[in-house]
Length: 212
Image 1 (tube, helix red, strand yellow):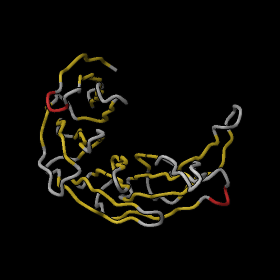
Image 2 (image 1 turned 180 degrees about the vertical axis):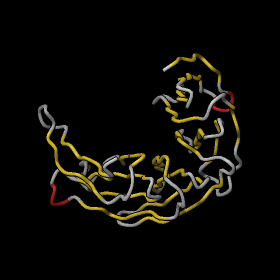
Image 3 (image 1 turned 120 degrees about the horizontal axis):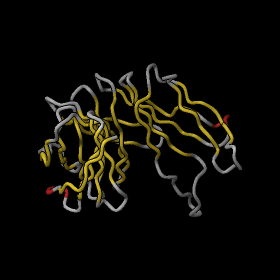
Image 4 (image 1 turned 120 degrees about the vertical axis):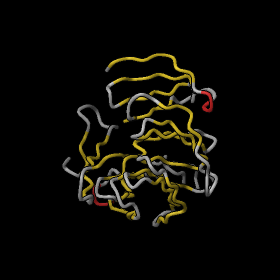
C-alpha cells in the first residue's frame, strides 16, 4: 500500500542486497510482471530488466531496472484504463505485448517497444470485471471474473469471441497455470481453492477443492 516497488539483488549472499524503490504510482500497486532479459549481439543477456506494474491509479508503468541505482528509470506509462488495473501478463509473439484487465470491464493489449508503448486492442468483458488471467503458449488467455466465470479468449484476434468454460459458485480472485499448462488453480472469494485438469482448456475437469 506504500505505492512502491522494492528492487533487491538476489545474487548477493543472504541477506539479499536492497537496491532501490520504484516510485511513480499514485495508488496501491495491484500486479507485477517481468520481461525476460534480452540478448545482445554477442548472445549475452543484457543487464537491464524491464518490469511492468499495474495499479489502482488506472495506469500501467514500464520500468527499466539494473543493479545500478543511477541507471534505474521509468521508461513510460500506459494510459487508457478508466478503472483500477487488476492484472497484467506478458505476451511474447513476433512483437512484445502487455495484456491488462481492469474494473472498467475491458481487457487491453499494448504493443511495447524499447522506449514506448501504445494500445493495440481493447476487448469488452461487460458485464464482468476480470480479476485475473493466465496465458497459454498458443496465445489463448483464460480469465476469471467477479461474476464467477472462467472464460477463454484468443489474443491473436482483434474481436475474439469469448468462450465460457466454467461457471463457479463464488467470484474469482486469482488464477494460476502450471508451467506445463496441465493444471489450473483457481482461488475463490469464498476462500476455496479449486484444482482443475486443463490439458484441454475447452473442457476443464475438476480434480479437487480445498478450503484455505
